[in-house]
Amino acid sequence: MKGGRLTWFNAYNQSGYLTSTNWQPLSGLQPTTEWVPGTFLGQSVSTIKLRNSETGESVDLDFQVVGIQYNLGKASAHFDGSEPVNGSYKVCETAMGEGGVVTLADTGIGFCINSNTYKTAAAFTPFQFARPLIKTSDIAQSLREAGVSSGQYTGSVMVRPAYGFRSPTGSWTYRSTTGVPVTLSIRYEAANLANIEVSGSGVMPAKYDQKKLTASGQTDYLITAHGFFTNGLKLSFPENETDSFNLAYVDEGSAKPIPYSIDCNACEDTSLVSNGKLNLNNRETVVGGEGDTVSLMLNVHYDNIPADDLTTGNYYDQFTVYFEENL
Image (cartoon, rainbow, N blue to C red; front, side, top):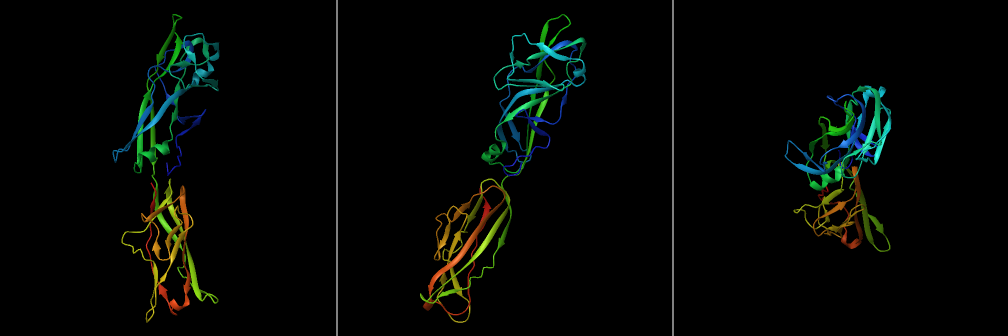
């Protein structure tokens, strides 16, 4: 997971739920002439703890195993799903079979079964594989809210699918299979700033107003931050940065400094510096955005400086701005 984007490498969406791309083989199943797929006996799982083994950080994630898929494998050539269920257990909200795969899911509490049984003339192992169907909360949001660092977060629970089968004596028996491990492993890359790209000359040639006898000038800096951003970019001025933003005369002789302003087109506080004075009370502001890049434009300008305050020559100043991911 990078920023807020989650990409699964060995899982996918099945019937609206998350499941593994791999099937778990199950052995030791008693051959039978009739059986019915079911979900899980006993208490259901409601959370899973994802832990970073390197840092010790952990996140509790809402996590429900809401169903199961059975793959009959070779048994699909022997069993026909044709008999309606007559039993004491409820039928699952989602109960369907296709191509030798039975899908069961239920958002309620308790054990549920398929709507039909599977029958065969000669006893045969009922199925060969299974895989759970999972419902989780927003994983990206949970990791962000926990404030954990980047790394591998892994958690595991064990579930035991249960099914009913007709015993050799003709009675119905319900039993659980061997455990099926459910492991969730997330490679989390938290919001981070990789680099800053700045484009702009920094040159502010004077434009004169012959009627007002004033001069103005401006320049733009296009700034692009690269990395992974979930909550935008923070822009701040350092504590040791002077709160006086003025262009100083750098040629021989002396001249009055020229106060300048800095505007930000994408910041929450668009006016950062006004006529030489910093406007930000806490020295920082935020640029919103998500994804691989966050962009903004800083417009640096001086306006309507009286001609009597100007001296022909070169003026210069520099200022420092810090950028960091906004967590």
